Every structure is written in structure tokens, then in C-alpha cells.
Length: 495
Image (cartoon, rainbow, N blue to C red; front, side, top):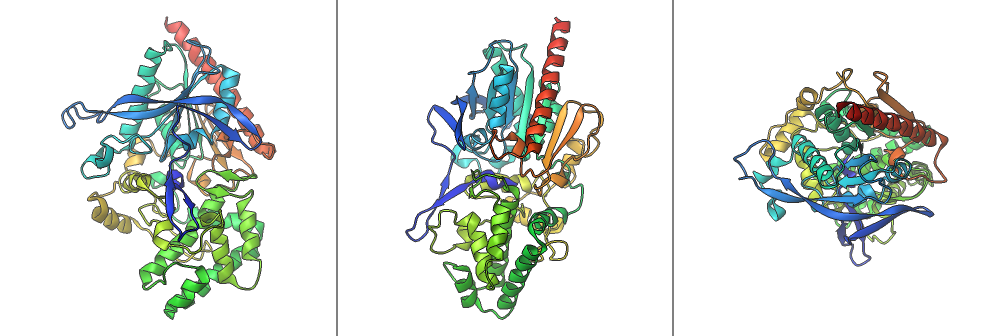
């Protein structure tokens, strides 16, 4: 889920990994979407935010600078709605540069657009370099992040003379979860939410722990059962080599910088390889992208072609993983522990400081106990139980996870009394079945996108878009127009 956390480029000189933080931090940025430019240019600003919203003594009313991006290019000042992106687990420029639908919609609605960065990610560090120390890391919670957004919206509306402007929140993945929670927690501030690819059920511990990697497998199986079988066969050969401790052969087959030397190294290699397939399934867009890494168009199809390109399954597996890890082709070897970090999220925590923040969240509120088992999926058996999570998290962060907390705090699947939320999901996205797939009422609408990958609908329009996502965006636009109109009516009646 947190693959957004870090991107990397690789230099040919002995393979150094450099964590990138999105676009350059100039005051203005414009965004290019495959052949045409999405205006407008965002301005990067900082908001003086309260460190701890819920305890008046702990931090002595301390504040920190929370980054946000804003554009009023389309805004009818004081009247047009505010479209607010609830930033998730990474640098906010990454989300702004891959969510062109929001600015396209803003042009239609004369809206102000704000992308807010989540505390503890990107440049929004409440305690600067000490932010990831214990106990400072303890202020990284969903509740604190939501309060940040509620305070920011309220104060910016005052500053911009926009107190009567309806607010619609948007988010993708974890950001989509936050958009749902904003509508549940602060309906006085937020008139509606578009939650794209938001796994609000699975991350609350609802559902089947086998679902995620089963659905990753299904994406590759849909290209052809022989693709799934080739992946499974390659992992079986790797297992046999590991059982014979033929570590030099494993190093050679997978172009590893160092030979593995233990069962833990093999476990890590399996995790790294599984993570590549996860990323290609999530980012299975019909055009090439540079989001969470560089991907070709239709990466699942490309991966299956690579897996079936010859009889040497181990070489094919290495080359398939390289679609994600070595998109530049410059890597001369794979460094296991630089390219992939094992953490409390079996789908991967990314790299860099952002990975620390996501690991902590996966150790506290966000429940990500997913497993692969080589029966319902094509991957090696890799369990991650509540007991595994508890042991890891106590050792790493001195915390005990609360597996049912999201269900208690944010309603779980008991959402029927909520309103004005769109739950959009693409059927290629392994996160989709961890979210809401059926409409729950006339104002809790599920939008399912055939041929859609991870929050495809939030991306800017593209010539290669399937008809399904064009239709989905139209549905979303119409619903949002209704919510804006309803909120305006309500505000006028209260005057």
C-alpha cells in the first residue's frame, strides 16, 4: 500500500540507490500527463499546525510546518467549491502529479484545489530529524492526521474568505481511507468524499487474509494460466536451490550483489520478488507511468511475456522483477536489503524516511496481516499473523498493535448511516476487494471500474483510458456536482 513512499534511481556505478522526493521543490510546478499538460501550476506553502490536537500538556502547544500545495487558477473566489486531497503516505508532490482528474474537475466547477501533506511524510515532520524517535513518533496517528486536515481546511477558509465554499475531499489508497474518515468524523466541514481504491475493510481486519495475494495472482492468471504456473514453477526452483544451500547459484541466477547466506536472506529475496509482482498488479495502467517507480504500459502483460520468454524460469523471474526494480536497465546487480525493506506491511513499506512512518502506522492502527500460501496464490508461503505483527512491532517500536481499533473508531463495515461517499475500485487492483464494492445507499455509491488498476480514476485523462474509467469519472463528477449544490442550498438556508 505504501509503495508511494519512495522512488529510486540507480546509477551504473556499483549500484547506489538514491531516494527521490517527487518533483523539485520550486514554488511552482506544472504537471505533464502523457502528451498534454495539465494546468494549473501549484504553489507550495506551509501551514502552522498543532503537534498534538488531543493533549494540551504533552507538547506545550508546539507547532510544526505542514506542507500543502494550492492553486486558485480555476477558482471563482469566495464561491467555487474547495477540492481538498487528503495526503497519504508519501511526498505530496507525488500525489498532485498523479491526480489530474481533480484539477480537470476543478476547471469544470471553478474550484480551489489543495493537496495537503500527511504529518510525518515528505517535509511535514513534526519534530524534524527527531520525528522517528520514541516517543515523538507516537503523534503519528490517523486521528491526528484527520484533525490536521480539519484545522487546515477551517483556517484556510477563513484566510481566503471562503467560509461559504463547500468542501469535497479526495484521496487514493490510504488517502482514500482518510477521505472516508473525514466525511464520517467531520461532516460539519466536509460535504462529500471520493475515496478511490480505499481498502477500509481489509485494513480494519475485516475479510480474508489470503485475499490480497490471491488477487495479485488473479491479475497474472487473467493473461494466461501458464503465466501463473511459470511464476509458481520459478519459486519452486528457488526453494529447491535454497534447501540445498546452493547460495552461489542463487546469486548467479538472480544477479545478486552478494550471495545469500541464510534462510533469512532467502525469505527476504522471496519478499523482494513478491513485491515486484504486487507493484505491477497495482500499477497495471494502459500507458507508461512514473508513479511509485517507472512502469511500462500494461506491466502485467509485459511481465507474463517475460516469464514465458524461454525455458530458464529463474532467469525469467529475475528479469520480470527487473521490470520494477531495474526499469532504467542500469543496475548491474540487485542489493537485497537496499531495494526492499521488510516491515509490518507485507505488501511493502517502500524506502527512505517515509517507510519508517508507514511501518509505525502498520504497527499501530493500520491492520495489514496478509499472507501468501502457494495454494490460493502463486507465491511462496509467507505468513504474517497477528502474533507475528505483535512480536515485530513490540521489538521495533515498543508498541502493541490494536487490531480492532479502525473498526471501532471508523465504523468498520457498519457505514449505512453515513452519506455522500463514493467508493471507487478497479477490478485489476489487488486492494479493491478490501474495500466497498457494492453501493450501501443512495448516497454511499460504489463505482467499479472494469480494467482499472490502483485509483486509475484519479489520474488525468489519457487517450489510452478504457471506456469504463471515462464513465466512472462522469458518474463521480455528477455526484460531486449534486453534493456541492446541496451544500450550497444548506448554507443559504442557514443564513
